Length: 211
Image (cartoon, rainbow, N blue to C red; front, side, top):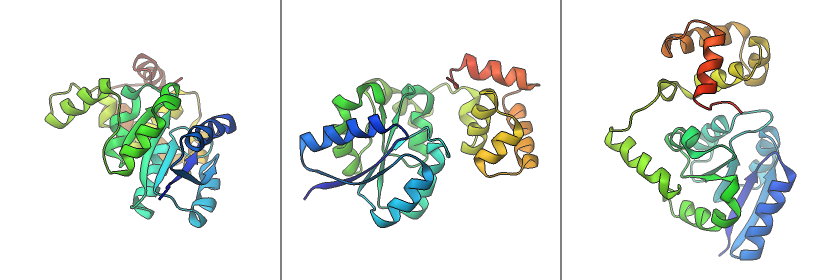
């Protein structure tokens, strides 16, 4: 029986490319697709799938938040994160959040089928290089930068503020109050031992957390 796959990516050309790879290979059925979180909510209720291929960067919601929604509301769906960002930036956070795989868009065409098949079986899929990092994480021997101790909401607010968004813009994008965003900003500064927003921006740039 064909494996049902739902694709969430805000770039139409990327979705077309993924569909083409899966269709050409055979053994897969495209259950649906979406370019945003809101489109996903509407379409996935009607066409759930065994495997969700999820872009980590969406126009209306961070992929890690979508991952949490899927984990809480569709626990039988396996999630493969698709990202333009290198694995070391988000892979471990995504896997801790419930994803079973992390695939860089640059290698998606070559690795997509193998990644989906592995994730469908409930097994973790990452690159060979990243597997060593995961082992060290599990063993507790990996040296972690301070931002990896942030909660997902804190981490996303860090990235948005460092990317130049105001507290008001962050609040609107994340569905929070400005006061809540300000409170989170203070916690983030404390946890990273920083003083100002400028310090936060430099930290994010030094750790390649923003584009």
